[in-house]
Structures are given as C-alpha cells and as structure tokens.
Image (cartoon, rainbow, N blue to C red; front, side):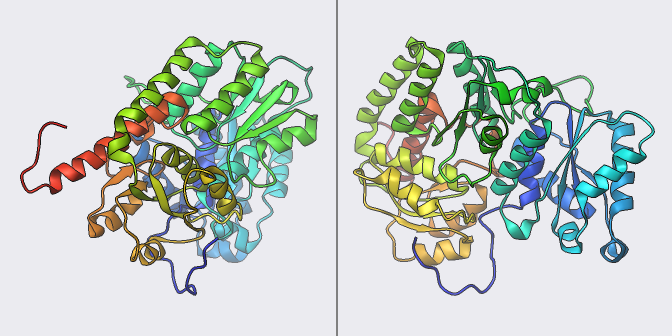
Amino acid sequence: MSKMPPYAATENACKLCKPLGASLAFRGIEGTVPFLHGSQGCATYMRRYIISHFNEPIDIASSSLGEKHAVYGGAANLKQGLDNVIKKYQPRIIGVATTCLTETIGDDVPMILAEYKEEANSQLPELIHVSTPSYAGTHMEGFVAAAAAAAGQLTEQVDKHDGVNLFPGFVSAADLRHLREIMDDFAIDAAIFPDYSETLDGEALAEYPLIPKGGTPLHKIRAMGGAKLTIECGWTLPEKTAGTVLAEKFATPLARLGWPMGIRATDRFFAELATVSGREIPKKYRAARGRLVDSLVDCHKYLSGKKAIVYGEEDLVVGLVSLLVEIGIQPTLCASGGKSGRFAEAVAEVVADFAPMPQVYEDVDFYDIEQQAEELEINLLLGHSKGYSFARRKGLPLVRVGFPIHDRMGGQRILHLGYHGAQNLVDTITNTLIAKKQDDSPVGYSYM
C-alpha cells in the first residue's frame, strides 16, 4: 500500500456515506421500507444520489431529529416515525439504519425497537436494524453491514434443501438480472440477496406504487440457512458478512469468490456453479467466452500498452484491474475511499504475472488522486461520475462504471459481470480510446 501525504481535509470524496449503502441493501428486500434514524437532511441527501443514478423514485423514511433530540435522545421520534411508515406504506419489513447523529448521542436502537414492539397494540412488520455511522465507514461497508444484519435477523432454522444463496455485492441492476439468468440456466434454485434489480430499475407503471414490486422474497431469506451452499462475491470483504453470519448460525457452507469480472474470475465463478449444480456450463456461455477471446485479438492493437487510473469501490476496482490486465491495459494507480486493509493485497493478486504492481491508495479523495497522478502518463480513467472534474481538467477520457453515475443515463443498466459484461466493457473501453485518438487528430479519420 502506497503512502499518502499527511491528511489536511477531504476534497471531493471518493466514497459516499454508510447509511446510503444500507438503504440500497434494504431496498433489495421484498416489501421493505428503508428508515434512517437521524436528521431529515440525511435521507434527502441519499435520495438525491440514488435517484440521479437509477432514475427511479425512492422513499427513505426518517425519524427527522432536530437540535433538541441531540440533547434528549430520539426514541420518541423513532417510534412516531415507525407508526407513520406502517400507517402509510403497510410494509412487510422496515429496515432501520442509524446515522452519525444518533450514534454520537448514543441512542440504543435495539432497545428502542424492543420497547416499541412491547408497546404495540397491533401486529407489526418485521423490524431489522443496523449500525451505520458515516464516520465509521463507506457506503460499501453500510451495504455489507445491512445485508449481514438482515441475514442474522430474518433467517430461521429450516430443513436442508438444494437451494443456493448468491450474495453478489453492490453490483448494477443489469448485473443482478444477468446473474438470475445464469442461475436459471444452471437450473439452480437461487436466493440472490439483496436484489434491487426491479425495485430500483422497474417498469413504467400507470400508478406509482408506494413500495415497488421485486426484491429478494422474505420466504427465500427465511430459508437461506438451509441452503447447500452460499456463494459470496467480493475481493475485500470484512470478517462479518451475510455469508459468515449464515455459516456461524446454521453451518451453511460458504464459498467466497472475487467478482466475476473478466475471463479468469468468470471462469472460477462458472466452475463453482457447474460443481454445485452437477451440470456442464451451458453452450451459450462457452460461446460468449469464445467471442470475448476473439474480440481481445481484434482490440489488442488499440489497448496494448495503454495506462489507466481506476477508482471507486474497492471490489469494483479490483475486478476492473483483473479485466484490464487481461486485455493489455496497465493500471498505474488504483484508488478508493474505502479502507478495508485488503485492497492492495487483492490488487496484487489479480495483477500477478500480468503487469507491474500499480500504486494503490485507500481512504483517499480526488485531490489525493490528482496529486499522485501528476507524474504519471495516463491514457484513461475508469470510475464513477465524481471523477469527471478530474478527467476534464486533465483532458482524459472517462469510462463511467460503478456508483454513482449522475451525468449520464443508464448507470443502472451497465453490465459488468460474466463474459457478457466483460465484452461490454472491452467494447466500451476500446471505443473510448479510439474516440479520443480520433478527436485529437488534426484531420480526423472515419475508417479504422
């Protein structure tokens, strides 16, 4: 891990806040309303980022604490807020995430929720909770923590069954739909969790639903402990995840894989599915792999030797680096606002035998990234929209991937995973470099 200069202040953070990630995870559970225990501004800020990326409305409830609650506590507001949500939305589940304010003043949310259940005069929806102060992590850590909390609080002891749990991490809605297609093609009865492929990328409807359809069904979550295998994807996962919760609580077998991005990681993912299903890899995926390899030969003259900066969520960056070195692009700087402590090791693993070790920085902002990039020769940036200002100042092309993408349409429909996702990224990266060369030419050209 490369060293950064002494910290002064954060300028254009390369991360978002922890309860935002929790809200996204809760949105991937059927019939759930995300609820932030904190000020109204937190919910408004998170809705703004989520809506601008997914181009879908999202309701995030709030206990709407003010100045006096910082002194006297927010229990009364939390209970009143739950009453309002139950009356208006009639949810099956309410996912309560804390914020900086409520963590700082020391509100005991599990105790408050227990009191609320005792005081209730009618049947309540499921109430799940997770601790997510922003000063203790990023949106990715909030996402993982909320998924782990849901797995711990909603699952039940059931008989063993032939189902498989798939925890892909914070991927796009298109990725989730593609993973569902893959599992169906292997005839695997899968619980994909959390699944916001419909709740945050749904159809046009005549009437606005207060709670959109979709999400991982509650009955699937209840039974996850009885699955014959949990497949959990991620390069930099913490000690406690939904997968480890199930392993500890029910002895559910756990296989941890990196994100299936690029050829090698996707090969490992499909090999695992072939083993657990007892089936051969379907022909259409073998053919997609072959087309991908063929395209790498076609694109090689445009990609070979190019150098890139990759930034964003740690797992996404590692997956992108794995793909880039396979197609001949050298990552020279990898950066993330996260600080898992596993980032550099994961990058080293995927670049081994393919490319020199890039500079790797965690817990950085875009000021840091620009400072470190001053002496580097770079052809390309890969990351989310928060890097656009940097790309514009340096005159570098930016391939937008990850979250948030708020200056282009379709961020939720970018396919990153599997052979099909790799093909999509290879074509996008190649065409971005061709367009840059074409635009910079004094005469231009119209034929490759």
